[in-house]
Amino acid sequence: MATDKPLLQGQDLAMTFADRPIFSHVNFTIPRGAMISLVGANGSGKTTLTRILLNVLKPTTGKVLTSAGEQRLRVGYVPQFRNLDRDYPLSAEAFVQLNQLSHFWPWHTTKEKRQLHDILKETRLTKLAKTPLGMTSGGEKQRAYLAQALVNDPELLILDEPTASLDVAVKHELIGLVRQLNQQRGLTVLFVTHDLPMAREYTDRYLLLQNGQMTSGNAAALTDEMITD
Amino acid sequence: MFQLEFMRNAFVASTFIALTCGVVGVFVIARNLSFLAHTLSEIGFAGASFGVFTGLAPLDGMLFFTMISAVAVGEMATEQSRREAAIAAISSLFMGLGILFLSLANKSASYATNILFGSIIGISVQEVWQLVVLSIIMLIVMFFAYRYLVFDSFDSVGARVQRLPKHLLSILFLLLLAISVSIGAQIVGSLLVFVLLTLPASSARYLVHTVPRMILVSVILALAGVWGGLVLGYYTNWPVTFFIATIEVVIYLGTLLWDRRATGD
Image 1 (cartoon, each protein chain N blue to C red):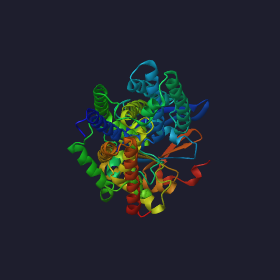
Image 2: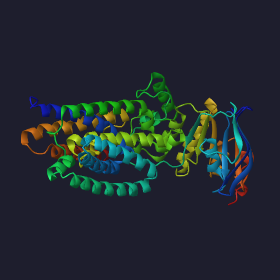
Image 3: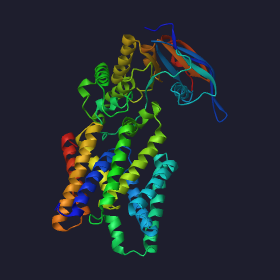
């Protein structure tokens, strides 16, 4: 479902922290509707690049261009860690609703309720809607994080190693679901991961950060030998 | 009971106190600020003593001290680990100051007892009005900031990703907390006002699972505590604060047991 039209382009990005260069001359394109993996060893700059795309960090040089020029995209983000303990009180439904910020008044509009209903259905959370999130499994929590990231209809979804703590069956269920959303509604996805088999199976192309440089190619061609610590 | 003016005043005041503490408490629990709520109560004691010393009304002294400290804590300690140490330091200093101001003001120990443990007899019509107006202003501010405060309090990671103004929200909330402590202390006393700011909301989180419902249940439980406390205090002549604290603790323990049975732990 990927088109040739770029949603996002990194142009000659460089990042240096206190004289320590993380990466330089990084150029890449994320086509609208593509599912791309961002891979690389620990410390290669994946998180730094993700934070630049989220607009939390400014690159030392270079810029990120979006389909609307230098304007910000609506980005949904599923982080690796979230400390929701067993006592976390909000239901899955109430947790997803937190990200509905189109109005300030406390009650939710009919449109917001419909969006919530649809996203819970798409992420297979309808049955768990009223269950406190603290009582759900790791995979169910990740689906709730995904639903929250998707509820305000983002143009780009960034998954930041969401499968790191999940067992094999659950991580395939989660990324399989994201792939389905990518193919059915043309959602553009950047999947940051260490897991090369998952990247090969579910993404179209890869971006590899290695020794401060970026390379890219077809995800099917990713091999363990390409990544060195 | 309602033929006595001071009882009418106490009922109106405690109704608004329960309303504000019940609402704010839900956020105190979500943001893990119980310790700070307790510290602000102690700072409130110092503020009231300062008021007595300088001739200000105790409520004004409390508002002055708690609001300044709330902003100071917010600015000094953005990280959890540093916040605890900052709160402990500020708390010790203010308890000491409270005792100093009372001593300088030459007031008797019973005056200190009133500030620390609250008094339903001492609250005037004018103070009730001040308290009602402050409560209404707080609830209006909460109304406008509601969705942002809820997001930041119940999912700090998500709020950061959505680039919510976290620092501003934190300071705003600490100010609201400072005002709640100051008005709550008028009836319950500065030492035990944090009972109303923590226990009703802590109980609510075991019973219901959306923020509006938590707020509703928390307010109902806070009202049960203050109204029950006033009635029992009136008929027994025992301190109202004792009854309020006991009612809230019993409800909290009950909800804990209920939750354990429901989840099979």
